[in-house]
Amino acid sequence: MEISIFFWPVVGGASIGLAATLLERGVGRVAGVSGIVRGLLVKDEDSAWRWAFIGGMLLVALGARALAPHTLPVGSLPTLSGAVVAGALVGLGAGLSNGCTSGHGICGLSRGAWRSIAATATFMLCGVATVYLRRLMQQGAP
Amino acid sequence: MVHRRIGLAALSGVLFGLGLVLSGMTQPAKVLGFLDLTGHFDPSLAGVMAGAIAVHAVTRRLRRPAAERLTWEKELSHGRVDGPLLFGAALFGIGWGLAGICPGPALMALVVGPTMPLFLGPMLAGLHLGWRWRMAHQSRTARKACSGMNVHDRAAILVQHAVPTRGHVGIGPLKEPSGVLRS
Image (cartoon, rainbow over all chains, first blue to last red):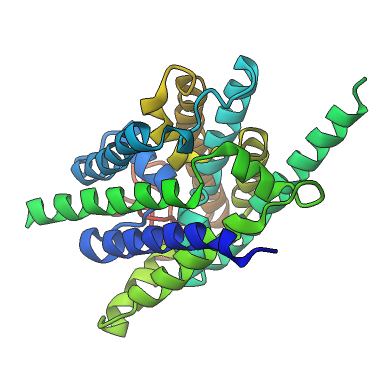
């Protein structure tokens, strides 16, 4: 295996880790995207920092669209119903477990939080199982 | 002071978004390859988690009084591993495995066109619903635990179970659900 395949993921990960520290120490909040977005869905006077964070992300997204459009998921969702079902599951799951890939998988694991370790192990396992079953079903089809 | 906080949040968002794009987390094909252990497994995205945790775990400790960090950790890790946590994480994993998109990349994909709202809309609705479900579960658990107690024990149990304010149980406002991530 080529070790260089890990270069950009590690660089990107480092940037995410730095972002999480900045938010924890500078703003006093956890850098979990689902939690940041959820806070905007209810009345919360402390929402300016949430908009600022999302604004920063969207700014980068605009830059990526201009410079390297292949890095953004254009038309990658196979079907309409597939997108709706997957989106609903991702949202419902993140709301119920109070965190997603970033809040549990990065911030929680970095703190060594048991809840986040349990959540991350669970969603990884279920993600792997889903991809496996889906491929099995596709191979089974004529 | 307020402006500084907003500026830092924006900078954090930029670094976060940059990290997602550079690492490949915004490319569903890569994510699905990472989850495809028994097929065309692409292990590269393991580097994202490794890099992020290594940097975050170290920098959050640097030149910071331990007491301050521990207070923060205690406040966040109040709750326990419960049903909604595991059930929610399972649903999340299934959705993630179907589309290869988690909430951060879903937001960023807003700028690339009209397909993403199909994912993002249900995601936002689900997020709100899931959170309310969790809150309802927590206050049910707490009420069960403190039936027939005097008011002081009751208050202690309610804090322990992190019951949200809004007076479900009528002991006056608790500041914020403390068993949950403050994000």
